[in-house]
Length: 443
Length: 190
Image (cartoon, rainbow over all chains, first blue to last red; front, side):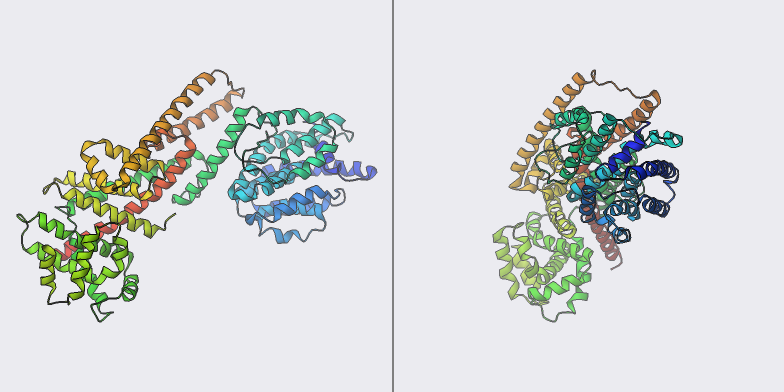
């Protein structure tokens, strides 16, 4: 990898026409700058966004002279600009830099501004290496519709890129030869093009295609530009093309593994949102720990609450809610004067209730409907006082809530029962004939 | 996906229905029996709200139906859905078991081929990490109903679903418990 740097530079310079004389001097300056930048990146990775921004801004200005317009590259960048919402904050600043090529670097640099860690990480790594930048951005463009997934290829790309960066760090002090070997150069360019070509979806049967592509590195450089322009093709939703990244194995197993891992990490992100306190943890094992704790705590809560409910209700009858709702309803009863509650009036009343009360009133209603059945069954053992209390309140609830809950209850309760209920209610007044109504219902 | 309040209402309805059903056969139940009944109806109600769209709910229903005592309760609670759900659950379980078995066979046959060529230290680190993750996945599988027969990817999706449902369950139960508490207090004082 000793010749990595100049080849990367050549990779960029190839598509355009660079004055050869000026080119040589610039290249050596460039590569020194790149090496420095990389070294600084490695050192300052954790320090902050703005430092890298400043640094990359410097880089951009310095690279101004030597870098020619790469139309294909600019193409990726413009496409990348649109979809990624996370980077929108950074994009307005890009306009400061003139020219399309600057746009690319500016994009990379200002990608750091976005709050997304992974974007930052990925693009920080890729600033120093235009081909991988192209790869990252093209990947972002291609996977735009997948939302979070677009971050992952960059991240993984950066993971691969990191390995090569570390190797190039050692080259910092070397005075690199300008003349690069043709075949090695071609390999690099081909590698760039292929990295830029990843389209990620479902199957891994195209791993064979990947392997054959990897074997084609000896082809001429002309195809590289063509491939670069093909990057942003619309991907077929049927199956996945997964390219082997540089420095990784190319057999189908590891490719499948990689796709699987990406899918899993995407899902883990949703879990992060769901489980409280998971935002700071990034490792898979830590996340799993939190998830397990959360699920266990929820299950324990269910156990505890069911125990509590069992302790509170000696007979599992839950009629006590009716009394509770009776306490609530007087407050609401004042809001509407008549007993015959139309559905329109009942609805605002229920909106006033808190969710708890709503829930309770709902169950109170259901209790109200079922107790007649239970009363029938309990003829022998039921004391007189209890039916009175619950029927009292149940009728109360029913008067309040009939019209609103009718539609909901239809699927739960038999039709005949409802008909029986509806016939009794219109005739009832609030105080007087409730007992009469109760007796009717008991029958 | 339903709104949470809609989910809560559905769950509550089913649950209370189940509780009433529990109450019919016996008049007197010990506290533990009551607790079991409450929990069971809650679980089955939760599973039924999912309407056989998720694996864990089917597994839960299947487990509940296995026990003879609970079977009739489950059937009553689910109503006409019960047959369909049971069929779906047994079918799915069979498929998953098959998948699991075939995966194990493949793993055993392939394990010899793949040899890692990393440095010893890296191997150690990665294998430790893998072991940790593996332990935790096993634990998670034991927590989520029906999790044993799932691969890791669908396990996470099921966990997501299960967590949402558990939350709804806890919320509703807590409301009911609070209401009962308040009623008891009022009953004592008034």
